[in-house]
Amino acid sequence: MTVATNDAGAKSAHVASSRRALIAMAALCVAVFVAALDQTMVLTVMPSIMRSLYIDVRNLNDAGWIITGYLLGYTVAMPLFGRLADIWGRRQMGMVALALFAIGSGLCVILTRLDLFVAARVVQSAGGGALVPIAMAAAADMFPRERRALVLGFIGGAAEAGGVLGPIYGAALSALWTWRLIFLVNIPLCLVLGPVVWHLLRPGRLPHYESGIEEESPARPDLRRRWWQKGRIDYVGAALMALALAGITIGLGTGTQHVGEAAELGSTPVRWPWLVTSAVAFLAFVLFERSHERPLIRLDFFRRPPFAAANLAHFFVGAALIIGMVEIPLYANTLFRMTELESGLLLIRLTLMIPVGAVLGGWLADWLGYRFTAILGFLVTCAGYLLVSRWPLEPTNFTMTRDLMISGLGFGLVIGPIGATVTLAGGPQWMATSSALVTVSRMVGMVIGLSALSSWGVRRFNSLAADIVTPIVRPEGISDQEWQAMKDAAAAALNDALHTVFSNFFVIAAIIIGLAVFPALFFYRQRARGRSRIPFLPH
Image 1 (tube, rainbow, N blue to C red):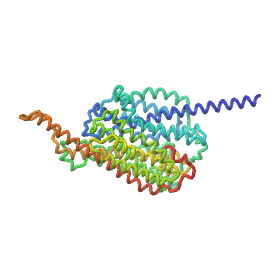
Image 2: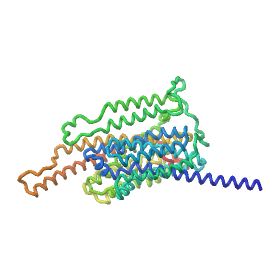
Image 3: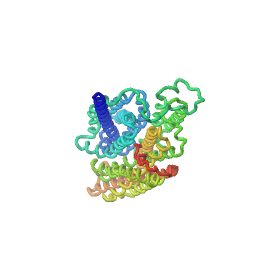
Image 4: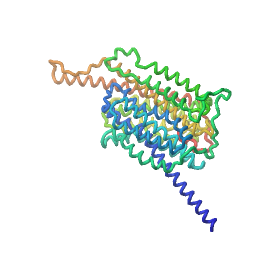
């Protein structure tokens, strides 16, 4: 009787623990999904935000900071909060992440100045970026090894789904009231998720169950370390990484001249002191990470050619993907005169094919090998972007759908082989670490790609529009027809200039994604040999 009672109690406790874990992971998946939504939901409402913050269309790079700021904070927060969660516990850092996300969202609702708005986006993104490693660590804690990959796959799927649905989500909420609603809804959501995370996640530092992960060993054991090179958390490394990313973002993204200044375009608006600061900070970061007892990023992984190649390829993917996701809604809104909802539906033709391509790419990588599948995906994306660059001023719906779906399919095809290569190169004990590093590579590519291309786009537009005279005051002695013809001619010339710039954007993006073919040559050639779950790990 006692044995039966004990068995029943143990079974009941196991069921309760499993239910607790599933509810916790569902809550974390929702949080990761919302954080991913906020990466892309502003894309379709960017024209409304620009009007509210008094940003002229001639200063597209200023508007780019709204997205770049989020990517910057997201990238820096991910490795730092992952380490903090290991030290202080999933529950505590999960609550901090939700609090930062809610505070940043609330500030975005009320702020009307661009600089303060961007700062609020950085705060919001720090919370959103922190949720990803916390969710992955919690999955490793709560689920046994045989179910861990599946749960991590759900987390990765939630992140991808958020990025896919973000544009249409932002457009739909904006249509209900105003674009500020997309930030306002985050506050009650965080208030609901907060108690769930606090109740279900376990506090304190947890062991890596069955993972076999060992403590990081110094890259140079013979080096005598100072007190600032020791400790469980590498705050100095995180600060240097943030300074390096911020420096290159500010340095590349500061072109703010207007058409009237086009004659002075011989001097580039790039701020070289910031680029120099970024280079110095990056060098200091590399040297500091090599000497720290527990570095923020394991640099020795990059000595392995497949691992370095996968990160470089993912960098190119990030740079090319963010160009498409930012420019397509602006393209549709400024030239095709589409509403924000219509431009969101146009962009979703690209993003919807990414998870479809990811499933197909994972299957192909298992069947044909990582190298072949990655090269195929990069070439498909390159072809799709080249087709987009050839759009006329009035493309057909079929043309836009075909070209964007081809591009999205190509982006999806490379997810599997990149993830499989980097996790295989990192080894079974470092799959989560490898996945985090390759994610950072893509985010860095997004930050640099958006900053550099938006700054270049402003200079290119100014050079094309320098000789265009926009009539404001009607000259005396001309008829109504002549006056209307003057305005129509100026508008047509500006549209032609914008069309040229957008076409150039996608040509450059096609070249960037085409360059990814070269590092893909160093991917593993062999197939996964039956381990079909590897290509579907979160990237």
